[in-house]
Length: 464
Image (cartoon, rainbow, N blue to C red; front, top):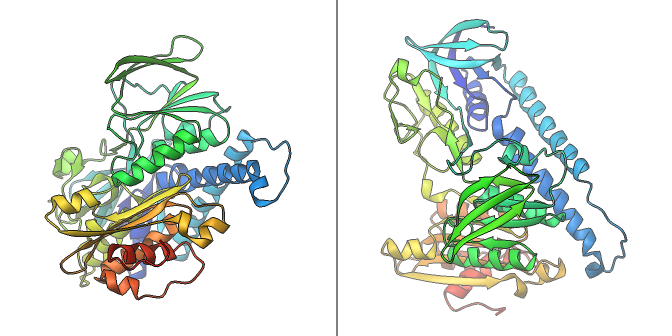
């Protein structure tokens, strides 16, 4: 191990490890401090293992509805333990992949907890308590986040759990209450409901997936209710009694209090930053509302110290952290880089049907002063969707009526998380609505719905 690095990164999540690899590509000597598994929460306890669980649930649903495809299957059972085991295997494989990339790029892994020290130094304390101090010309903080805990919903790790525990429960709960209906909440709700758990979602806002376009939220709520879930919006958990065999959950609604019973409560009310005990106060790094304050290129108020990912203001998403890490490193190297456009960040929710979006919602576009043209195309009118047995959902696009600028795209349906990149790239290239209409899309595909939705905005749609 070296004692001096051109760049030290504290945290090896999708922000930290991507920044480290890009720095190595640009000729920097890089060390990465990580106290747990390489890949951070995303690879080990978030993005990747949850998608493995969701795929198992989807396959089970296919089997249960195999008669719709002309296939007879009898006595299919969900092997909860097997699903969890597969999920963990996928995560472990991805973490080993990061190890390989570190070796390939000659990045040194420093196992332990990293703390900033004055004079461009980082102190690393390993599990055995040994402390080693390293020097670095530049330091990037990428310490990520963890599950947020509410006062009325204390997490005990047994009956009241967060997303990590939800991935590795010893046995499948018969009844589950999910508090919070952002991406984490609705994904776990779908997974457990699809394998037979009775699921109730409690959401403080007036609709589930409250950051999405209202039409998308309403569509997903209808689908979830049809699947047997109970959904309580404009509702708040005020108390959880775990003294008995299960849980008694008191929920305050507009109509009064209601008590729910369940085996487990999943708290999915968001994430909070990992900023404690990393030396911010000692070196004088400025924070505001629980986030590190940075400029457009992620430099803090202290020369040579930078911050990216969940600990800075912006969407707490893996792909955002990765993009920030690359921009930060390239700026450090003196390259000509442009700031990240946070209004062109795709958001994806991997429940079934999937949800994906980018840019303005219809409401936000109007509030921003735009006169808009809105087009919507249902998958029920798409040949590929009908053939695939995936006709639920739609694509909705929003254009500026004056100049044709693509303001936003909102999708709910099968595979839409793969389709949203078209809108992101088109918006980056300042593509207009008419250019999308005239871009020939292959038939039959799900992506045809994007072209058809654009055509609908200009009263040119063919298949409606």
